[in-house]
Length: 394
Image 1 (tube, helix red, strand yellow):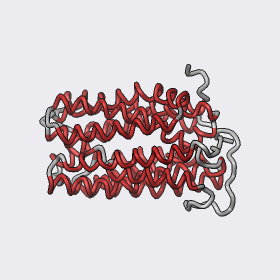
Image 2 (cartoon, one colour):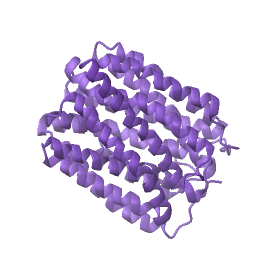
Image 3 (cartoon, one colour):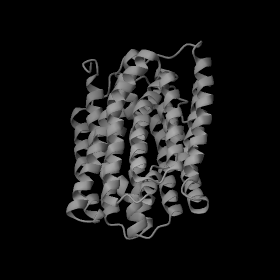
Image 4 (tube, rainbow, N blue to C red):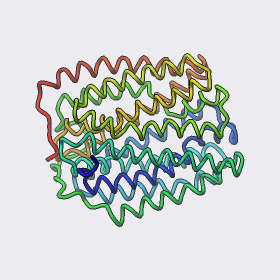
């Protein structure tokens, strides 16, 4: 089943595996570190996550445009992973929320630089009929690292109780391994089409289907606030800090197990039905988070949230690859990630404000409603798109 996966996709998957070990050792602990060790409010946590993700998004589209113009996908990918690795010491040395913001900005800046050229390498290396599998395989390895990361953090917290800084320091090691793999094993992915001189982060050169898809993704993302609020909901329900890492591990485990089957399902049945089903599942899961305070039910919802991510994250990117011309692949991915990332700032600010003023259930009701609206609009878009031609990878 996995033999048709190209070499670049295999190696890129392992790069993401090691970087996600590094990132997910840290990410579930950051909101707890901010609230318990540094005394930051929920609104400050939302502000930090929103600013970091929004700043990364602007770099994503800029990086994508550069990759299309000059064909330097590997260089930009390696630079991005290296910058993210450099953020870990800043976080480990943080004495106030301002330093945490600086560390998160650095980490997300690295993601902003690497994501579009990396996705463009995967798309350029894969036949159109295997795009769902290729992106699903990449997401599976990426999230396998996200499973191992919290497990390592859980073990370290068991040995050094509540010492978040120890975990932050050790997270540097897998980041360095990811950078080494890029330098040694990633190829350019074959000849990269050079985009015309007017290449930029504008929508010029894209058709209405792509623009409509971005608008729907942006609308959905306004309700999809930072996962920090899921972690805070688990803490609010009485789950201990150490076991929050365990619950987050279960979320990532479900993500891993579903990603490849989700990609194969999309290749066989079509991508729109899988994306639509995922949006409906998201609405149900967020509604569940709003309704319950039971630790066991919340743990189960984390697993279902992982199922949603596995079904849709790779498939949404594969679907995008069918909506953009080959010479603008990286820019298209950059615009997609920009929309998602920029929306996290208002989404996280809204969620933080709702939590502080209306209660813990409010941000999840809002997210469920936005997902339901996005599902209706995407059903309309996919019905319209059925009768129009799609771009292939060449």
